[in-house]
Image (cartoon, rainbow, N blue to C red):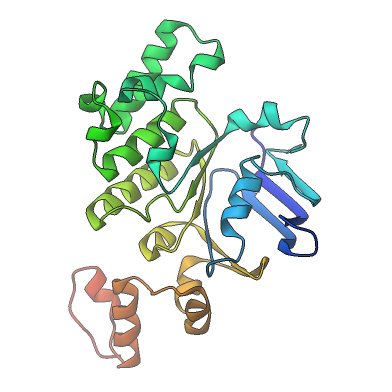
Length: 271
């Protein structure tokens, strides 16, 4: 069976937790399979609600969501959801097992896999996330970055085609965020995953293929990251600050200098 062109197709999707107070209002959107999309916007704009709808954790009030060509409904969600992995802001909320090994294996136990296949997946994804040395550790012994690596390994071991990160880097320090970003870049390069990240992190947005801006429950903009960071008014609305290298390049251009050479190790040139 050929891979679906779109991981997601949303048509006029609306959702409200209480009547007459829509959180999302007639959102129409397509996300190509294998792409990395950032969803950004001010607090309260509906980002996390959209993530839960995409993950099948909430059902739409109106409109339709199709996942890899199949409509997501109350009946189909149980067959579709295994194709989707979700990683949340606080990894502590995702731990089940008493050790890292048990935690990665937990999600596999309901898949009717042989013990050999389960052990193989635990080893494979622990190796991939560089946490084999942590397999016997209790989650409480881990750093924040290590906990997120375990959470991602637990999701990837179930081999979903789509992974949604809901503010997954927001509680990490700068070093751990950098390590997590590299993991996502490696996932993107593999071509095995569609990545959707709900985020305020500028470096994370810049590394993605596309930035979707939510405002007031609707799509306010759908841009490349470079286009987003060139729009100062939109950045202010989203409460975003462009990455340092982008701000440096913009400032040099204002002064009539060729800042591209800095990014490639060259010398400054007047235009």
